[in-house]
Length: 276
Image (cartoon, rainbow, N blue to C red):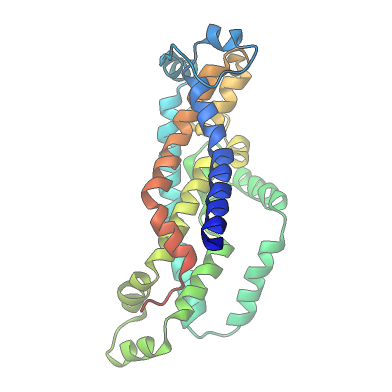
């Protein structure tokens, strides 16, 4: 009996917590389907609407070229994630399996980079990209984000959990390091790599500061710039429902991504690099 009571309160707490977490999303969607006049008439907030409308979504696309911003963000996210995945995989493999002079010192310096405030990195990157005349280019947007010390560290730890016997056996068979990486390490560490990819996609999709600094032409704006453009034009301040519709459109890809790969995310976080 005591166990059932304990389980009841656990589920009750989880239900309340889920409600707290999901309510802002519900309010965002609800506001996005209210008409401008209906939203302004609600002096007392209402948790439903009798006459939902999709006009706000049309207004969100007409206020700014939101479709163009979505395509730009998709290209930026995919290109950055793919390049970063190649860079961190090769770097993690080098630190985990290869022997070269000063490896531990270099890796320690890499870890020390994590202690540098992000603001200082942004300033340095801005000066570098500006000096290279890469402002208002996708190259300038992508380059500063193609590596991550934390992801290299995470992947290195997973690679090192794979037994040395597999590596030595592959070398006896004449397998090259690259082939061992592709055929052995990556399949074994796939859950962690999928988790890294998903986290990077979320990071790129939500990136705000760097795109705002490095672009001032609409053809290179990302969705973060699009939201800011709506607010700067006064559209968001005056028409909150249309602003919420734009936020729903921008948030939807990430929500779908999480729902599709939620099991992979949990597997990558909960398990190490070795299976079986």
